[in-house]
Length: 222
Image 1 (cartoon, rainbow, N blue to C red):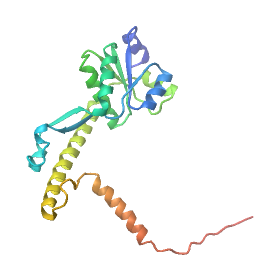
Image 2: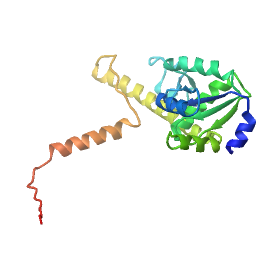
Image 3: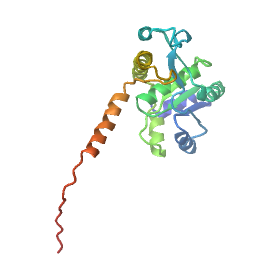
Image 4: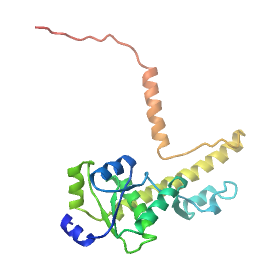
């Protein structure tokens, strides 16, 4: 959508511009107008209260247990700010990072804003850098947020939660019975932990097994 058509639709209206990071919001504020900033993800997914107890829930049940997304404690002020500002606006432009996580954060912002203003016009700014020319290009080519990309992030978050929580509870409770260690100690499991630990061990072994060898170089001067 060209900038002219956007201006025609929102002329004499207020537009709320929301960036993902403070520095991005400040830069856009200098380039455009007053902006509000969101700090990364506003929501996280977790199990309902019925499955929070380790002793009363079989870890296997966590693979099918209901999950809810809710605003994190650190984002409650941002949620209030968005709701307060958006009621005075007719349109919302999402300026979050143009990657999968940014798209998901954008929909978190959209859902919060639409909860108080369902008829809000939503636009997505696509940009690779925060400069005046880039901001103008983004405003001249506003698009729609991609719900499929956001849904892919939701799936990844849900898989990380279910797999991580189920195996963490299972192996912690199992090892506590076998070795009788402190009940407060958690033996965590995560989809990123094992490959990351593998990289650390691999590098450690490289350093431990390193054998110094003479190194020669040729220097030619004219």
